[in-house]
Length: 451
Image 1 (tube, helix red, strand yellow):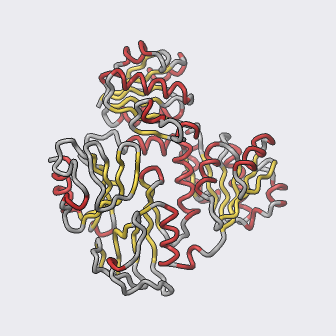
Image 2 (cartoon, helix red, strand yellow; image 1 turned 30 degrees about the vertical axis):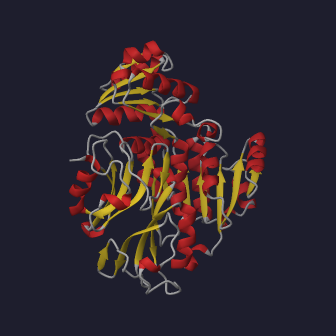
Image 3 (cartoon, rainbow, N blue to C red; image 1 turned 45 degrees about the vertical axis):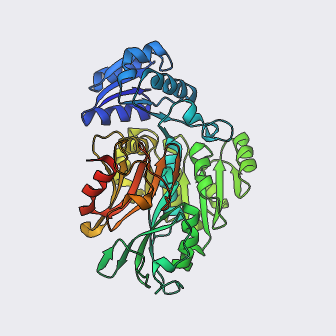
């Protein structure tokens, strides 16, 4: 595929290398001459020096003929202008990096529609999702995120205290956007139907909006949502803001340590449920004063990798079991992944890595994307983009005639994402996430892509 990438910072450079390595025809637009020289020397890509917000530069880079245009600079305004220009020139798809939350507020204008953006990418929000996975869900729950966190999959162990055991699924009063997609009962595991029952000891995979799944999980495993968790976050930047939005629940008692006094005031005003502390998160004295050793999770999110690493090591030495750190640059990456257990760092999240993984989900010539594979190869979670000439295009979920043991668990319709119901209509260009048996994939591709 022909890809035009705008911006060669940490995220852009990582993307350029990965896309080039897997065989795509990559052109990079970059204004910094030193970065251009480095890319020319190190990567097998075409480099165009210039402003990504310039129509003439984009035309020279071939944006109008590109399969994908990826504005990935650190400046939102440049990215939005480049997106609009590339779409007007004829780019097939535009995937744009956005930071400012203003641009995802659609109350007045839908920026994504206005600027012709097919996919929005927010590295900070993606990092927050990775960090929140284990915080929001105890050890007995495995979780995956789809649709940038708007739809979640949780694997939950049904406890003896569950009061809905023995009832057929068809008789359970589930929220309209909650789906039970997979049940493991002893050695038996499969995609359920209306007559299937849930029993204590089963492992149930459910799909839906995170807050609705939290309510449903309380029915399956009451103890898993009763304990209040203490979280300490060092740094008050964009990743922390995105993470706080995901932790806005009475289950979480959150403290943020931030060195900038003005930023402390902003956070305290915006998030009333958070205790904000002005100080240095690497200070052992401050960590001791705040009794960090009693925290369930310690998370470092500043833009300074050394501070993140040192604060994380301090917390681990004090006895915090779950320490997470953000790694902004590749300098320490290999060493830290080799030594993270010894240093006490449980999770390391890098913006460039999570962004690259998200982009790679969509820049593919494969007819579907495999998102998850269950044990014993019995079921898979896949995402399929519906073509205009597909048999399913224009029909409701009920009328499509899905293969048995196939359930639609997420629907991306233009700029809206939801767990679909029987009356939701599938249109060309929509993306649908299914849980299905492997032998049904061919039938689903025929229905969704006429293949």
